[in-house]
Structure formats: C-alpha cells, structure tokens
Length: 83
Image (cartoon, rainbow, N blue to C red; front, side):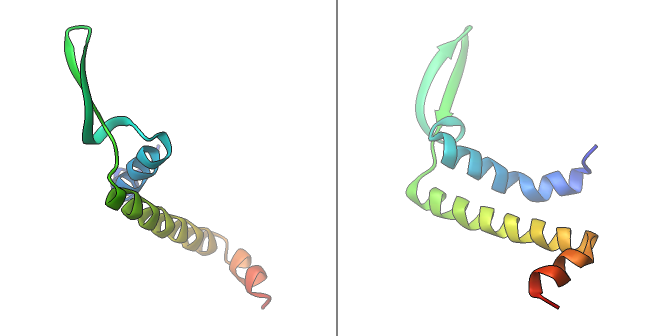
C-alpha cells in the first residue's frame, strides 16, 4: 500500500495531468452541469493557465521520481553520468 504522504504530495500533479489529457472531467473549472440518476453532476476543464501549471507540476513530479530512483539504486545515477 502506498503511504498517504506520498499520495498527498503527488495528487495535485496527477489530477492536473489527467485533466490536461482528458480535456473534460469531474474536477476544476465548471464547463457543464447535468442531472444523472437524480444527482447534479458538474464537469470541469482546465483553463489555459491550468494547462501551463499542469505541465510544470508534471515536470516537477517526473524530476522527483527520477531522483527517488537514483536514491533507491545509486548505480543508475553513476551509469547515466558516465562516472
């Protein structure tokens, strides 16, 4: 099971990436509202600024994951730098 702290620190980046890739989802900027099974469902979409932020957060997350990989297996870091 993944610790809550890891999920909490990565969740915003993951949500932004999903919204950027799927264009319209159940989150962030209201673009449409409709009733499904007697429940109001609101769909959201990223703004232009949100798309920029999503790209920045994903890049940060990718860099973080690479750093963790190097820390868990230091040989990867040495091999990639040609040391």
